[in-house]
Image 1 (cartoon, helix red, strand yellow):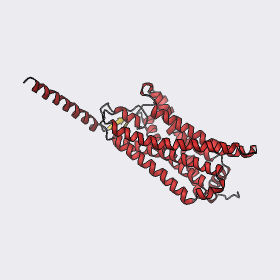
Image 2 (image 1 turned 90 degrees about the horizontal axis):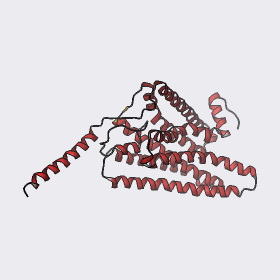
Image 3 (image 1 turned 120 degrees about the horizontal axis):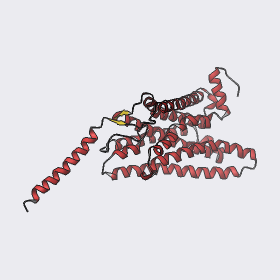
Image 4 (image 1 turned 30 degrees about the vertical axis):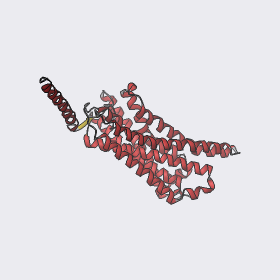
Length: 332
């Protein structure tokens, strides 16, 4: 039986060394390598130009919306207040991901520091979460406007709108903080190469070798319950909205009601479908192209399209933006 003693010691030493190596690998990571968007110099410059164009469109559109709503007193209503908040989330998300991608494409680099990666993951989860919650609130705004127009001023007063916006931002902040703290406390022992052009939750999880699934499962259940609750609320609201619109006798009234809802529904559908595919797709169908396309669609494209779809189709906003640009006051 004596031969079992050194064998047990050897096994214990091997397990301890493996655990030490695992923790060492995690603590020794000083930077990550982001996905290279192209192999040739011409394609890299093309990606740089595309990202530059999209980011300039997002900055210009959202900047004009924020300025117009802030300066135009006739736009101080719940719908435009939430549009202003939505524009802030769009600016935040585009400034979180695109500048680093443009830098990497222009200078043909891939590294991002450990601390900057953590900050980028926190900010993208924060801004995208805030956008999702604000889209839910805007759905409620449309529901009250169409289904309960006589109670609109009571249900969506200035104090109620401020509290709803504060709740959206606070919920997004708490969610982002929990996810970032959890992901970057996991041991990482599968290298430092990320299959994405920015730091994203699924990519960090791929590098993890942690066995603490219970903590991750609890956080996933908490987040999923919150997001699914918002989704159920939006579905219920739109069912009530469409039922109310179909009861309108005049075609002109139906068209006006639908025109205020369909743009919101279109952007919401794009945001949800691409985000859900990016985060919930099976690992078996994962590939660089399948990981890249949905991430671009839910993190880069909406900030450029939202001002056009939501606001610039509105005559009041058009007039306010024109007044802001020309410096002349017009009668509305």
